Image (cartoon, rainbow over all chains, first blue to last red; front, side, top):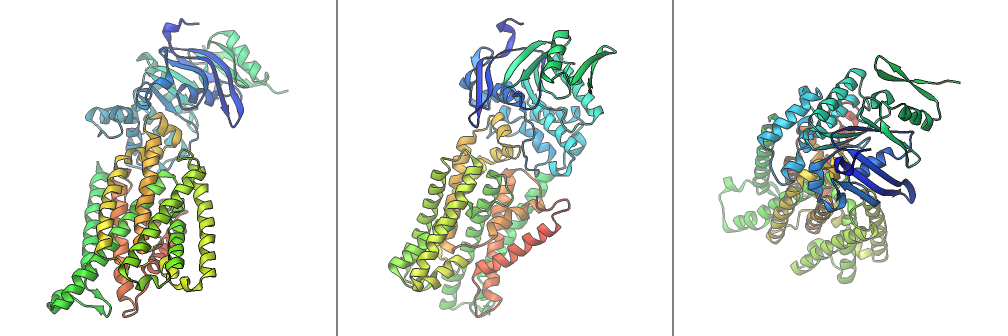
Amino acid sequence: MNAPSHAALQTHQLQVHLGGRPVLQGLDLQISAGRWTCVVGPNGAGKSTLLKALAGLLPHSGQVLWQGQSIESLSGRERALQLSWLGQGESTTLDLRVWDVAMLGRLPHQGWLGAPTEQDAQMVEAALKATQAWDWRERTLGELSGGERQRVLLARAMAGNAPVMLMDEPLANLDPPHQVDWLEQVHCLRAQGTTVVSVLHEIGMALHGDEVIVMDQGRVSHHGACSDPASHAAIESVFDHRIRIHALDGQWVVLPRTA
Amino acid sequence: MNDMSCANRWMGLLLLIGIATVLLGTAAGSQGWQAWWLAGGDAVSQQIVLDIRLPRSLGAWLGGALLGLAGAVAQGLFRNPLADPYLLGSASGASLGVGIYLSLFGGNAWAMAWWMGLGLTGAAFVGAVLAVLLTLLLARGVQQTLRLLLAGVVVGVVLGAVTSMISLLQPQVQQAMQGFMLGSTAFVGWSACITLAPVLALCMALAWVFARVLDALTLGEATAQSLGVPLRSARLVLVGVLSLATGAAVAHMGLVAFVGLAAPHLVRSLVRTTHARSLLLAALMGGALLALADVMARVLFAPQELPVGVLTAVIGGGYLLWRVYRGSGAGGVR
């Protein structure tokens, strides 16, 4: 584990109740700065809730600390400048153009009354080009397919250029080549010193990360290096040993284990 | 960018249509077309144009602009293309206000002394505001959009029932109530314009300040929150804008149907742009629509005059039906 000084985000006894039900039950976590941490686990394990809580978007008990400072003490804009959050399955109205959507990622930099600057436009252009969404910039979200839309939303999250990126199922609806593109983008972000936390169902992709947090029933059952066999064992265990992780060409593939 | 000039062009065009229609309205009289600029002007016809037709046309434009703006705010705030300005119970509140006022003071709503008319306007406005406050109370604030919508529907149904009861118990109120329910611009004068114009300016300015919050909300509430926008204050102010704009319009013109729903839809079918522009466009569109409907209401069956609300319902409703019919394809109502 890393020393607290190297943690971008920390939680102490983090608890979240949704609809009276405990969803996160006293989590103590350290998310290492400048590294890529993946959160995996079965449906309903609390992964998305953890990500939302880390983004400061949920009422919680216990603490979420951003560089040692309580996340609740930050103003909305300060928090948005530090933490970029890409949600999953939020219903969106589809009337905005791709360019305007990506520009929303720059909102924390502009303030909600400021006008976009030349730098904002450059960042938006770079993000749209990185996710290969640049060609659709004049189209509305409604005119795109699910996967194309996801790439625009990804560009929106990246355009903010925040030091921490929290991504909830960023690969949803993406075809395999664009999943690989995403992988390269994350490597690129990490090379720039960005801390990336992603919830992923694609275990093989998740194991490309630096660290993995394995969750089950609102608790962290394991937190370790992605390459550590103990992490693989923990992942297989929370999935009731219905999957197996195999090594192949220096990567990992996940295969179902049928009876 | 490309869409900006497109949006700006539409803004200019809609403004021109609005101005042209208001001027046209000054030539629409009780006997059909009466082009005052051709007839020359004796003092009486001049007075008719300046004191009756012009404020009426201008008032119709202002009221329509308020409803169009309120509709755009409602659809953005509730992220629902079916949201309309009457959603938070303001319409049923205004009706109840009018119903109570009429049952207390009686009389024919559209042919009463000016001070009665003023009281009626006040009653409608107070009713609209109180109904929205009741909705907010039931929804325990503005934070939960769904609860707010549900509370608005409940308040609408309950207040509507009370209004029906009043008009059943006091049949003499019924005819005047009907005029109010159908919506009419017939009694909009300079005093109404003097109220509506600053309300429109204030509501537009406030809505415009929060236009980017509405943009952020299109990506969902959590995403908007993650972008650090002041969601709480935005909701509070925008619900205020919604109530004030609707209350002011309804108080002066009754329940004009469909302008608030159709104007933002029409704007969306013309141009896809951010709320900073679409709010303004929706207001201009609403103004042009109602001013046009007002002129038509006067001349279509002259010397008979249609309640303008009937026309807007037929035109706006027809348009929406057509959009829904086409809507299964791309670019339809979503």
